[in-house]
Length: 149
Image (cartoon, rainbow, N blue to C red; front, side):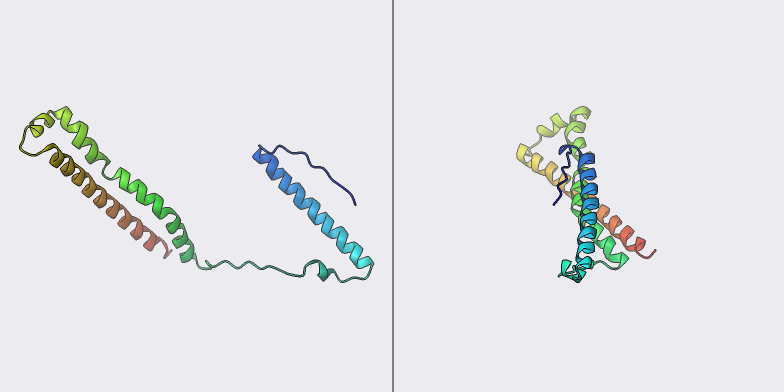
């Protein structure tokens, strides 16, 4: 039995990739040597592979691949749309009112500060829902019509 020592850098991705390539080459050479030795002794080579595994993907159609991509990206899009949609309204309701000088008169009205806070929060939430819904609707339309090509 022969031994081959492969020295590599475990922190380097390139070194790991090179190690995999070298191991694949050595394993294929080892298999060839074993096959030749078995043939020389008159033993059937099929005993080396008692089980053969065949991979068959579920997504055979192009439309299913698009749906798979959509299901992977949909949570990311939901988060991005929920944050970026109401951002302009939130900034305007906070810093915009202070800059225009309308925050102080608003605080002197009969509405309590909690009512003002919840009103602003409600406005931001509604803007987020509208922005997210319209963005997802546009995404749905784009995916639906791009699948036909």
